[in-house]
Image 1 (cartoon, rainbow, N blue to C red):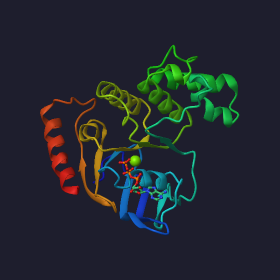
Image 2: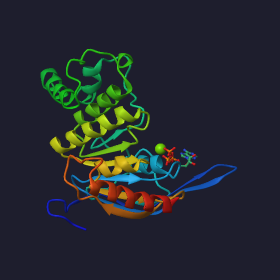
Image 3: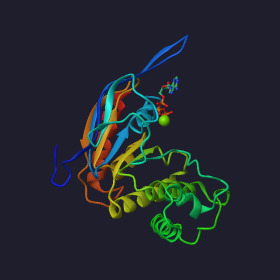
Image 4: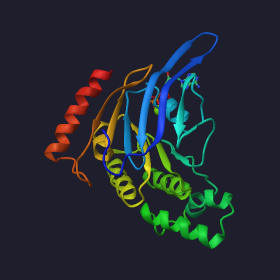
Length: 256
Ligand SMILES: Nc1ncnc2c1ncn2[C@@H]1O[C@H](COP(=O)(O)OP(=O)(O)OP(=O)(O)O)[C@@H](O)[C@H]1O
Ligand SMILES: [Mg+2]
């Protein structure tokens, strides 16, 4: 379904297949996977454990190559990692020897952006993720949720067109997870980007997504999709929210 203002396709996965072959095993992880993502859309990929979500994310990011098919980004085939595609993982991979500011301004620093400009830019994203005052803190002194905030600010500071997030809140406790969902929703509303967000949490999917794409068990492909057309920010106990959660929950159970 095309909606006003969201018509340009930015990412297209065409007939993706991926197998891992070793001497002993032949593992088919992706099979005939097709997916189109529109500019500024927030797409949540909801898939069961071990179905191939991270493999799919790595292929979209250009970190791994598919065995079959291709990923088209802005009309061009992805063959290697591209800074226009930012990735946020479950564990943040922050540089422990850099403070928050220097973790966030790492990308612009590598691109030799003038100091005052990059510090201002990093500060903007540090403020946006709610870490004002922690600029000089080192990752070891931050909670898990705060580290994820730094990871998100760092990804944004690279000016990606598309943000790929692979279960970024998977390691967080339930309360922190809720506050991170609210944070990412606020950031996305202010700094519109295309987001492809992976989770196996149905409530998280309904809270964040414009569209939930359901993936099957391994070898994974797209099983179904549900448009979430609720006003933002959403309310976890709203009647319509609960109805969609149940509907998607039933579809999700049938993919397993
Ligand atoms: N480089 C690799 N070589 C061999 N097998 C691999 C490789 N990477 C992933 N696999 C296998 O592919 C399958 C899918 O892995 P993947 O990490 O993509 O799934 P996932 O859905 O992200 O899992 P999780 O829910 O644990 O995050 C798993 O069985 C995994 O062991
Ligand atoms: Mg994974």
